[in-house]
Length: 272
Image (cartoon, rainbow, N blue to C red; front, side):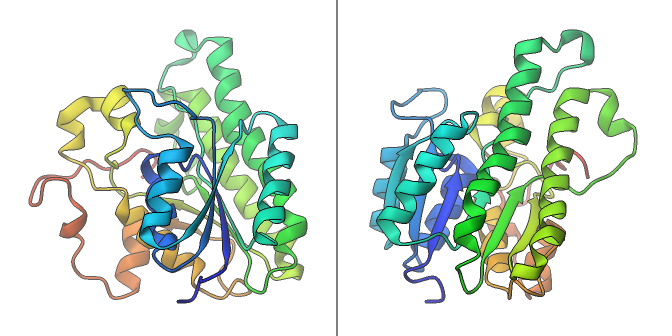
């Protein structure tokens, strides 16, 4: 068990892709820090840091549920300090927390613009910053950020400029950190799904049941994340990965198992 006793810090891990990644590493005996805001369940979203922590323990991992709003640098530092105090260090950071609003400029309110930038950009930057001193002490440290490959084709800007700015900023942070942290043997990569993923955001904000049925389950992203983070940090860094390509390069031939409705037409995700 490659990750037994290793500590994986995941933002936004109370549900969706973040929780799926947490459970994948939990099955390997890892320590999982569930850092998110949800302490009471929203019926539309489901899950809290406590319910996710319980599932992690049941899957074979150790868990630490930490209420953390990554817009607040003090909460970030407190969460990191608590993780180190509990588990002795941090080996992997997964920047999963993100806010989305697919609105054109005229319909993007300042509070929504600020929310996306505060979570997606500022939160990713300062969470990474807080973890770096501890990642430097790990033998195979990774940062993985859930954001897309950079593509300057204007169609990705014209319909949802504010959101695109934030997701591309996340990738620039990931790739910038790869170079900055290369001398310390810390890997930094981005990961993005080829298709839409069956999450509460897709269900409630993007396309309802129809889009869910054209999506893959979060487990495909979790398996891809596991593959990336299993690789040597010194050589696997600076990439913007696509989930299915990672798995196919590992020899995985059965991607159908990840479809919500096997055999259905899949809906390609944004930015690809």
